[in-house]
Image (cartoon, rainbow, N blue to C red):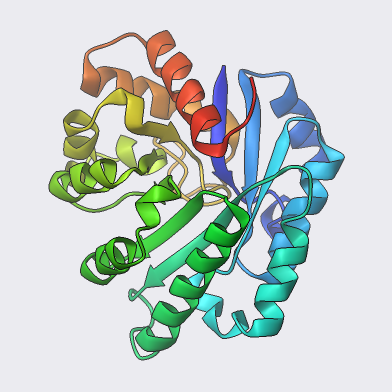
Length: 256
């Protein structure tokens, strides 16, 4: 059994064969998927997918690229969307300085405001952080966000930061990048943290693992992530699947 904790099946990359692919996934080892919002539109899309497919759940939130959407009206819209029966988290939220650092203050404000919303809703958070390690950790500490729980999605920082995140109360999201030969820090992070704090994710259609790097990703490729984690940990693949599945259920407060 495999749980894909972070996917974007509403993305246009799936427009031509979405239903066919999801049907194929439903007959695979993939048992549960959380489709994650990145803005108000995709948050609605995620809720819609969770209502259409039994094994889909949703997260609602605004990615730092769309931080300008986090107005009081935007927060009210997320609050309404979060009433969906299968909404399990607020996300993805956070900071991204890779493309744009000029609006860092706006990103920080949006991040903090959505953490407040998560507290109000008693939901875990899905944290997006790229080239913004120090500011991300400062905000997570400042807001006591670890009490909410959740995941540092697409983790890309040092083993030391992975351990600090785990200590705060977060899980570490591991996807296709761990299979890349040059992904030294992520491999070291997987080795450093307990398996009990790792969850699997695709971020599909992005970040497909080797040997599909550069192609469209899907939950069907998570087996390659499982194999690499098992190799790094020196354990069998079934143990990785079973433990990460339990971790995801706990993180999202979903019954088996």
